[in-house]
Length: 138
Image 1 (cartoon, rainbow, N blue to C red):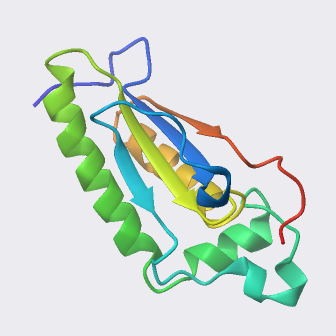
Image 2 (tube, helix red, strand yellow):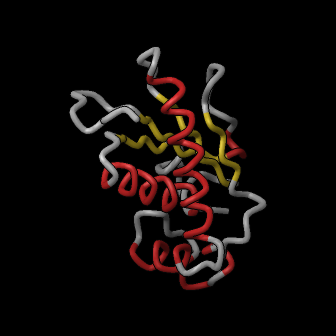
């Protein structure tokens, strides 16, 4: 098992996006996580959370309180680690694309949480939010 913690560069690059805006261009070997069908509580269904994004503390709390949140995070972490172990032999950075409908709420919350989890496990990880600033939600 490789020790990633001594790396000077991120081994995992997480990108959040909205399927409504299109999937980021990718190459073979990226992990695509589609949150649209996952049993997460949708902040857009709560009047007091409408128009907020995945950086808002109330939105984060709402999404993370979902029944499947931690199960999905562990699933993504396991898949990422398996792909990373395979790609590390060739010194490839793993791309993890996490999408929901608009790319502003659940994807952002899960992308940030995944980044924290992997960094805490000694896997240098960075995150990029493609559609966080695309304006108010529909």
